[in-house]
Amino acid sequence: MNRGVVQGLLAYLIWGAFPLYFNLLRTVPTAQTMGHRIVWSCAVMAVLVAGAGRLPALAAVSRRTVGIYAIAAALIAVNWTMYVWAVTSGHVVETSLGYFVTPLVNVTLGVALLGERLRRAQWMAVGLASVGVVHLTLLYGQLPWIALSLAFSFGVYGFIKKRAPLPPLDGLFVETGVLVLPALVYLLAVQQSGAGVFLHGGTSIDLLLVGTGALTVLPLLLFASAVQRIPLSIVGLLQYVAPTIQFLLGIFVFHEPFSPAQFIGFAFVWLALLVFAVDGALSSRRVAVLDEDAA
Image (tube, rainbow, N blue to C red; front, top):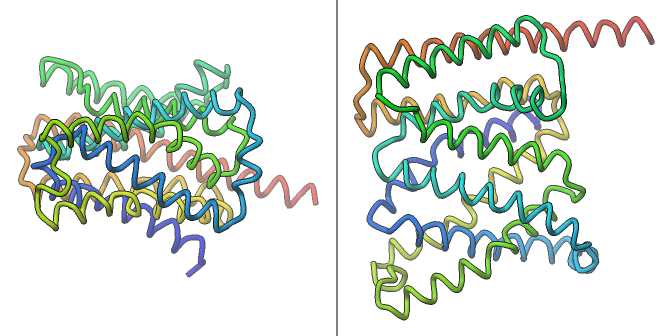
């Protein structure tokens, strides 16, 4: 199997298994889990960036560039916080919906912010997903806000990162670097107040909190390497692995309720993704044929 495919698959398998890990931290306040995730991720990134000899280059980064990554950092912090809270509060199924919807949110952002034109099949996919969201809204009596918060925060984050000037490794270090000082101040404050869990919740909890750093960075590095080796069409198919695993974990491991009415709403989203994926594959094939003819 292609090395890039293996790396991409591993990245999405790790992301899909996140609920299993973060559920072990359900006794830790979400804010503290997030603080440790930021601090330890930054520590891991600092070691990697230093090892790659990138620190001198990063010291010369402009304020404008830091500003771009500060916006990205705020969005990913919202996404991480919402995700951790949802998983530890018994909403794993709805988090999976958020990441199922994200590709369609990306398409919508392209239309709204870049004036991109959608093909007929893409409009159909967006319409089907919208029907599913409306159905779930009527069912819940409110918007599926957890799913939409995850989808839009990650979608806008991706939009900004596509236009960000730094390589993936450098960019992630700047993002976590922007967040690390507030996170450290918060963690020190809760430790001083006696409410801090770290070093007071047992060795296993301490190790799990420290481990959030490597857990966050590893799939990102695998993904960054994969996208350089395989076509985006394959990446587009692999991205459904993580929410599928999360959905199955929510149903069969965490035993979250999932009614036939909820299934109908999810089914519209799944059908939208099928239309979207098939259209993307056909479009990529047409482009490849045109390139061959031109050659």
